[in-house]
Amino acid sequence: MAESFINENARGKMIVICSASGGTGRTAVTVNLAAMLAKRKVKVDILDADWQFGDIAMALNLEPAVTIKEIAEKQDRRNARNYSILHSTGIRVLAAPDRPEYADMITSDVLEATVSALLSETQVLLAETQAGLNDRNIQLMEMADIILLMTTPGIGSLKNTKLMAETLEALELKDKVRLLVNQKAGSNAIKDSMIPKLVGVEPFYFLPLEKTQLASSLDLGEPIVLSHPKLRFSKGIEGLAERLYPQEKQSADSNFIRLFQKKITGVRGRVDELIGKNSIEESEGIQKNQ
Image 1 (cartoon, helix red, strand yellow):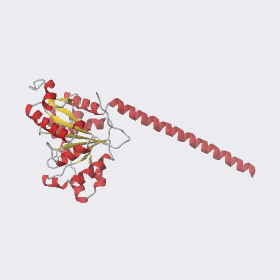
Image 2: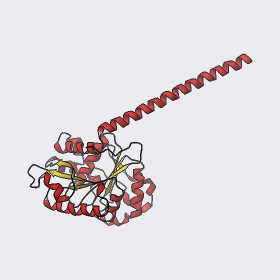
Image 3: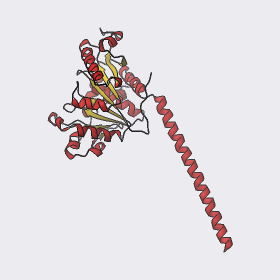
Image 4: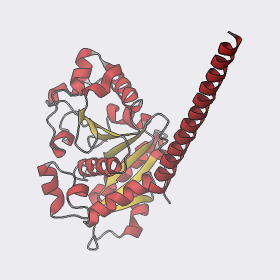
């Protein structure tokens, strides 16, 4: 069942893309999900919250002149989106610092103000964290609407994901968790039916394994959903976007807005016509009296 949570006229919503272990495909999912949502005319921002080694800008072939580090330096938190860089797809990216030693500059206050500023100007904010749990990751999860917890179907990744899910439950955040299983293949020793028991969470979505094109698309800085839209992985990302934001609802919302605007325009036209007619009649009345 699809779960639409985006309201075009309201404050933006945040999805945190995280994992217990490295190598789950967080960056690939983040940039391709953003590209797919942008293709559907959703206003999307990405916050690269892997403060030490974030690769979002590289994965989109962007060379940001400024990053979140400059927001921290200048204390310019209310204008966070001015420090984002625009991608050709329409995605805006607030990049991670260009050096790992700058990560400590991103304090709790800087992060909270930055996220609030971004959410006030976008529909969807995708925040990719570094692997594991730390204070800043947990802070982002507390602010998030959805926590997209990624894993691969290997026993080590599933074991760590279970521990992370249990920690999030202890923090009263489990209701936000959506388990995304990446690199699904028919040859996996762990069958789909075993995952809920191993992790303690029902999978929200499965993404198929892509062995050849995905790595090169990241190296080239071009989302695979745009360069190879017919691949199973691209179709999988399209399905994930549909789960999060059903296109039928998007079209219905857009049609409602257009209809509302049309009605307003019609009312204004009739009001202007009536005012003009009354003005002419008043002018003619004045001339007769003279």
